[in-house]
Each structure stands twice: as structure tokens, then as C-alpha cells.
Image 1 (cartoon, rainbow, N blue to C red):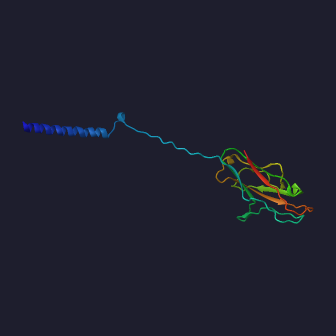
Image 2: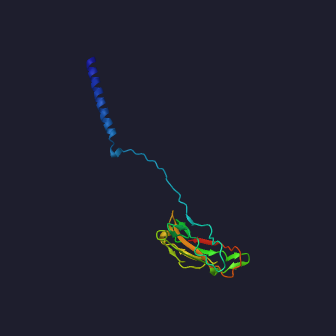
Image 3: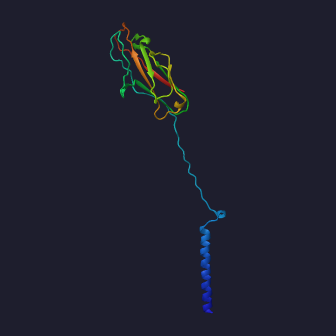
Length: 195
């Protein structure tokens, strides 16, 4: 009997092992009805600041020393790649809206109480293909006004032109009148970008 029990016990162990192995296979191949899942969420975010700015390639326009009755020629020259670049105004925006640039002098060229007629101080400019796609309104030389005058209007595509911006080129010239009294004459040019 001890032997029969041993066989019986041994068969039970084999049966238990077989069921256990079969049970493992059932657990290792999950049934869709008993699928288990776990999920976690991780928020991601970025803040893009608004960009709306103007930059100038030169801090000043200097005509140097001139004789009364002389013509300055176009300033600044700023020759790059064999071409005069002038004063480069770079306008940058990512607001998605059309914008414009206006220019004015804060007053006439003045030295103490003496002034040079505003008609003698003139500006003109241009855009280069690939640098801007809007409309430049000052293609021929005209007097620099003390009242802001729109010189460039953006295209719809320039509402977002980051990071390189749109570039507008300008040059200035001065026809010094014959009767100019000696002195250092100065004014300030103001460029304003608005939407």
C-alpha cells in the first residue's frame, strides 16, 4: 500500500505539474476579455513669445564734411557682395498680421538756430528679391518729412517672417544749399513698425 500511495502521490504531482504548466500557458497568452493595461500621462508644453521688432544695420547716417552747394551722394554705401546695400532695416514679426514701416525726421537738420531746408535731405530705397515680399513706397528720392510717412507695407506672408525677418534697404542724400552757415547740423531719423 505504501507503494500504491507513492505511485498515487507521484501521479498527482505529475497531474498537478501538468495543470500548472497548462495554467501558465493560459496566463502567458492573455485573452482579450481579460486584458490588463496601465496608462500614464505626461503633459508637454512650450511657450512661444511674440516677436515684433526693428533692427538697423547702422546707428547713424554721417555725411561727413561738405562744402556749401555740394551734393553728398548716397549714404551709407555699405558695399557687400559688390553692391551698395545702404541702411538695412530688418523687420521681424510672428504675430501673423500685416504690418508697415514709417519713417520721419524728428526735426530739420539743425546747428544751433541755423537749419538746412528739409527739401535738401532726401531718402530713397528698395527691396531685394528673397529678402522681402511687401511693397516699398519710396523708390525715388524725396524729402525726409518730420511727419511719419509709410515707406513699406508687408505682404500677408510677412506676418510671420521669423527668424530672418524682412529687409528693406535705404539710402540718404544731402544737397547742401549754397548759403549754409558753418556748423554741425544734426537730426534724428525715426523708423516705426506698426500692425
